[in-house]
Image (tube, rainbow, N blue to C red; front, side):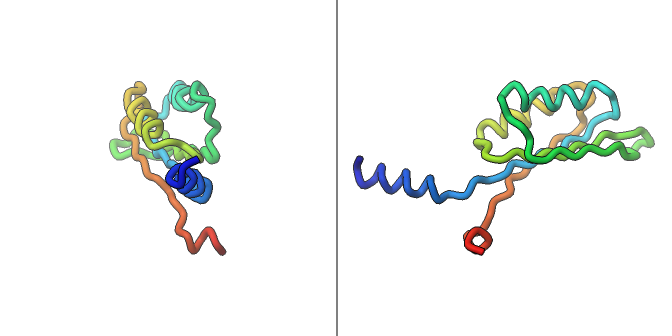
Length: 108
């Protein structure tokens, strides 16, 4: 193993895994949640967190708000899932963010 390859593998072992967060806002229809979950299931991903709420939307209609967190997800895969979520019928908005951890939080 070259010095460069060894350094890269050592760096990967100490690189903290990020958590990707998806916030989905959709019409409160019964077929939305299984369609959203399907995008993760067919990639063999189990969300670390799933929280859904039905709330009053801006126009007086009920809105389904789903917040999902997935650990150890590659950026390309997260972006692809977000694009697919935006194509689901009844979905109005999809917001994404990446939650990382600082070195000080990891050493505590």
